[in-house]
Length: 231
Image (cartoon, rainbow, N blue to C red; front, side):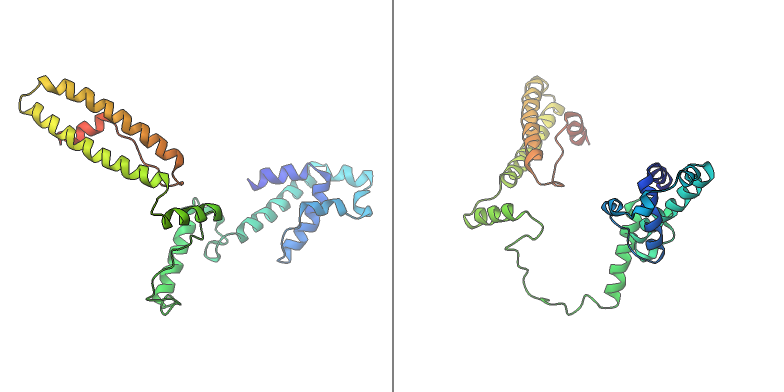
């Protein structure tokens, strides 16, 4: 990834002059300059001679520049990692590795007692506001709460769960009657249950469109529900 990005930057003469300045800054522990600063380069750097431009286009010089720029990009990406993972960026395969480091820090802090005697310990939480919610939505939810109402997706969630519970109870009774030898009413009951299942799935689909991210639910499948009853 770094080599690919380095080749793209090397293909631009302005990027080359920018890299020469940025590599020196990163080497001293500084931060990468903004790309907009490339437009404010000195006249001496912008008016390069034909001999220097031709030499910079040689394969060896370009490869050397790509390698140097790749090293700078790797150094910048490495500084983004936690100290425990710096220097072993290639071994970090997923976010799970970073999450494990965070969890280890939390456990070490708990063992050292850093979570004891915190401000507000033993006091009820203030749930009047949600710092993670959009201010407009948070205000709307507080107005609904004061008037004894709930968001639409909360009410719809209750309705769906209630219907699913009743539907499964009806399916269980219909299957028990079939197992007892009453095959005549099973076909009629199964068709009515399938129609109710489609109605429930339609509500689940609507619920998933309006619910906050991460709270979606799965619909019902006739085959899986029948396997559940037969067990």
